[in-house]
Length: 145
Image 1 (cartoon, rainbow, N blue to C red):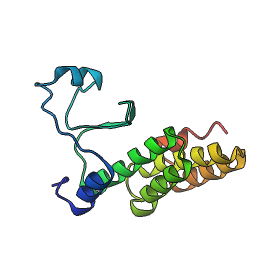
Image 2: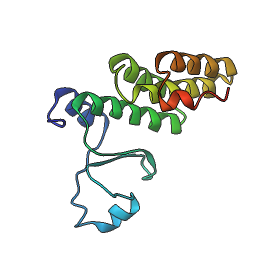
Image 3: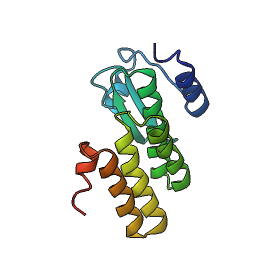
């Protein structure tokens, strides 16, 4: 149901190099990526460093939101802040009810701060997160400021 969805398959084939493995045949990879349950998705860079990880089944909309979030994390960790921002914005604009939207807003604020080094960018972003998703775990993480 999820992988044949047009949005999901377009994202997977356009932005990723999808690899499906039988982990019983390659147990070293299962150990390397600490696979304890499937399905298991890892967004890795060219040096096989994990930028994002998720286990379990998702609906097509949640899966698409998660893929954008993973791309955002990969871009953010690679210091491509504008690209990261575009992916994080996609998550909360296209999928505002997604469980991944609060995390996307959190890291959008982090990325904006990392670009500008202006604390107000971080505070504004986290304030928006608390206003939109006040009961989320991500909003709770911003209450120290």
